[in-house]
Amino acid sequence: MPNESWRNRGGGRATLRGRAARGEWTMSDKLEEAQPLTPLELLDAALRHEIASEDRQPPAAFLEALAALVGRWLLIRSEAPEMDAVTVLCKARGYISRYKLETGLRRIWQAKGT
Image (cartoon, rainbow, N blue to C red; front, side):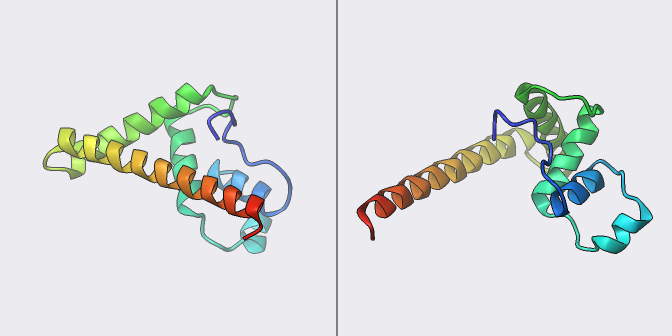
């Protein structure tokens, strides 16, 4: 995902969700697609709003926007924003490590035919 532009691609549901994330719903879209956005789609929409540009952005722009959003949220909601920022960083790193481990194990199991 780091090399993606974070744009929804393809047709149908993905296109509708992409327009919804950018606030470009039409009335017919609302009737056709009544399901709420997923948490990742909501985050993507918030990042796009933070960046305030529909132009293709480098991955660093999304990281900067994410850092700004998380930082502001922690300043408002946390009693110890500096410590909680470190906690969030560590937990995110753990999530990524677990995902990579599980993905690697699945590939090994598939190669062995188990």
